[in-house]
Each structure stands twice: as structure tokens, then as C-alpha cells.
Amino acid sequence: MPELSRSQIAVYGAIAVALLLVGVRAIGREGGASSGTAFGSPTAGGADSGGFDVSQEGGRDVVVDVAGAVRRPGVYRLPAGSRVTDAVDRAGGGTGIALLEQINLAARLADGQQIVVPERTPGASPAAGAGATSEDGPISLGSATVEDLDTIEGIGPVTAQDIIGFRDQHGGLSSIDQLNQISGIGPATMEALRKRLQP
Image (cartoon, rainbow, N blue to C red):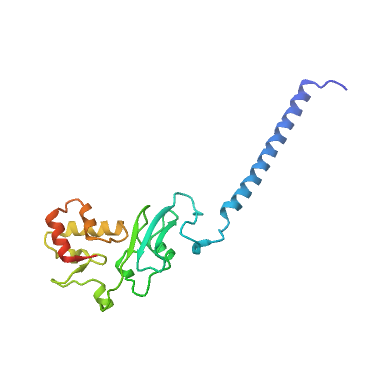
């Protein structure tokens, strides 16, 4: 067998390297396609399976507790970026006595958050549940406006706006005592809030 010259060795070496690169790329494409199929295909359970489905989207999931007037109260895992309305839907939606208009369904979910869907009390009309704004009647914390809160002693427009922002950020509030976390609300103001507000 005749000996190869240096130029021939260089040519054969370049061809071998090129073939190797083509092979590596082909293998990489096959691996990516198969993994994409595995992770991108819909899960068998979908949204109707139990509370801890694995998200098909990127990012961290959030785990929330849905309670109150929903058909299937419980703890649910949802994709990051989900809204309160998504959590309520996963819990089967509101019951016949749910007051969904009293919570902010558009609020973004936070990990560990509890969403409490209030329910209509027996004998109360839906209009009454939407938030009484009379001077003496209680104001619903779930649907109160800045103007409603401004009528409470010790609450000005700025603090009223802070309360609305805090409520929206947490997807609704289940207790008046949660307002104690807002900067600028002291014991005297909390006492006034407890007298005039209802969850």
C-alpha cells in the first residue's frame, strides 16, 4: 500500500472531522425531538386530574390553597403567572352561593397564597352582598372602593389606596386583621376598620 503524503493525510483528516460533526448534530437533533415530545405532549389528566399536576410551561409553579365557596376546596399547583380565576376554576368554580365579585379574579397568584371565596349569607340579597356603603352599615372589604374606605375614621385617600392595592396583591383578604401588615395602620385605625369593615 503506497504511503500517503502529508497533503492527503490532511484532506482525509478534514473529511473525518466533518463527518464526525455531521453525526453529532444529527444525534443532537434526534435527542431534542424526542425530549420535546416527552415534555410537550399533554398529560393524560390535564386540568381535571388531582391537585398536583406538573406544569407544562417553564418557570416555577405556584402552590395555592383555594377555600370557601368553591366546589372542590383544596391545595392546587398551577403554572407561574396564573391568576386567581385560574385557581378558582381548578377548584371546580364557585358554588351557587359564591360571591366571586368580591374577590379580584385578575390578581396574579403567589406561591403559598390562600384564596378564600366568600359566600352569600342566608337571607342576604346579592345586591347587599356587593358591599354596603351606607354610613352605619358594614363595608365589604372584598368590594370596597377608595371612596368607601375614605368614609372610615382615620382613613384618608392615600391609606384607602394602600388597602385596595394590598387586597389586589393578595387576591382578596379573608380577615380584617391582615390589614395590620400595611404600613401606617396602627392599633386605633385597626379598631376603626374592624367596626366598619366585614371580610
